[in-house]
Amino acid sequence: MTAPRKPQVALTSKAAPFVIRAERATDVATRETLLDACFGETRHGRTCQRLRDGRAPAAGLALSAMREGKLVGTVRLWHVSAGGRPALVLGPLAVDPACRELGIGAALMHQALAAARARGHDAVILLGDAPYYARFGFSTEKTAELSLPGPFERDRLLAIEFTDGALDGAAGMIVPTGAPLPKRRSVRAPEAHAA
Image (cartoon, rainbow, N blue to C red; front, side, top):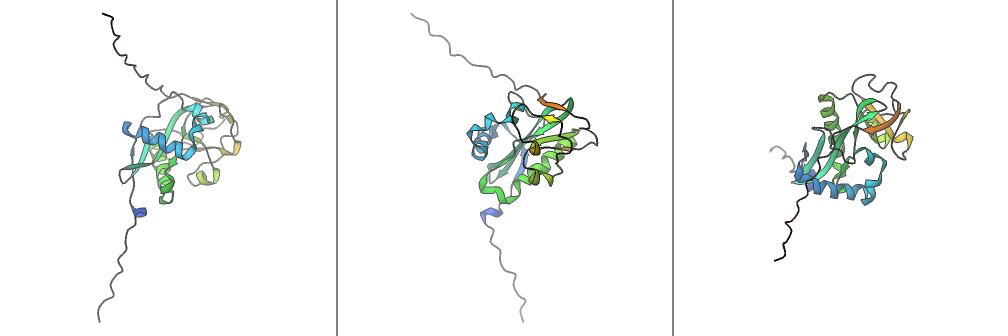
């Protein structure tokens, strides 16, 4: 009697692995295209964008998910003051719609939060879907007295503390505190001289 053979399992393209790494300058154009696809071209007018405009993400806290050499996910964290308390704001988190069933968003969240904690940050705030983000430890418990610089839905302003009490008593406006983006030097063409 021969031993039964194990069935061969064909790996589909959906089974292709992904890797999360630090964002690179070469990711910028693709990241912007991905964000437009996920949130629409009007995403720059959203309230949380006011916390990112003209600012660099927090050091070491801009991540890209890569699959088969293509950027398929992104997340960034930004320095803010939450009613006078130092914190980070997470966002945007985006995953290519064709890859949403692969766990990339959850993997990006776990890695981003672990990196923020490892770098000594005490709290992270975001504006998002409470049922989705609750599984990562986010809640409205510490955000009731905080505001954003624009319209927002109160039940979507969420936070997680890595240090107990980091957001105790936090009240008032959440404002950006991160480093400004470096100004680009414009290169002028030499003026033509009339002969």
